[in-house]
Length: 250
Image (cartoon, rainbow, N blue to C red; front, side, top):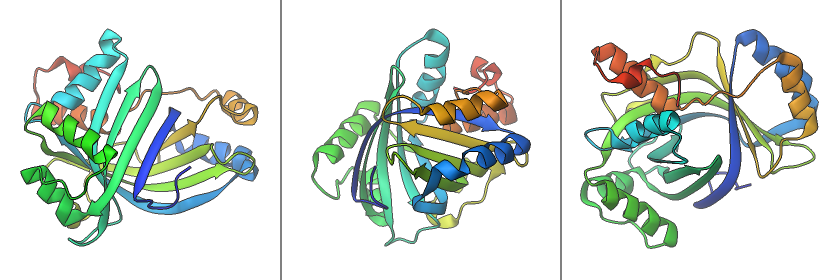
């Protein structure tokens, strides 16, 4: 597990997502509280600026992958914790999912450096991860900010196994205009009031005590993507004929 705001992060893990009603959230946290402790991130406001092509190729490919059974998905984003200023540290991330396993790599830089890189492709540093990000940026071509998504996160790790990470995201919101991280975290609600997105991240199998708690509540995984769900909402707002607006979450 990475240290708080570490400059370089590499993850390979299995992630499961669950959409919880307010009642399910309260009951589940009661059942598992004594098995978890707050991680080094604790509570934070997470702001993610998703990058995409003018035709939204990355999110459309992700949505299509759900329906046609493709095993690979990829996202590019810039993440901050709280509202940054020009000199604040942010994280440029590339996240890939292949056959159910998530691979995430990220490097830190200032917000100003990240914006300069997106605009002019001037790498702020040389590293293997930066080169991997750079390859994907050039592969997709004209990549630019496409969607800002923010939420309040509570993050925990297992008391007996700190490779287990459980996060609870509340007040998910998005915007597709004013796409600047320094402009704050405001946006349109993405989930019904009080609902929570839980993510369980493991290096391998889920602990039996956690699987048992989920079984007691009859809570099942949901293939929810924050960016995919927000994009689907914008299709509805713009009343397009894109069939992806009829999908659930990808």
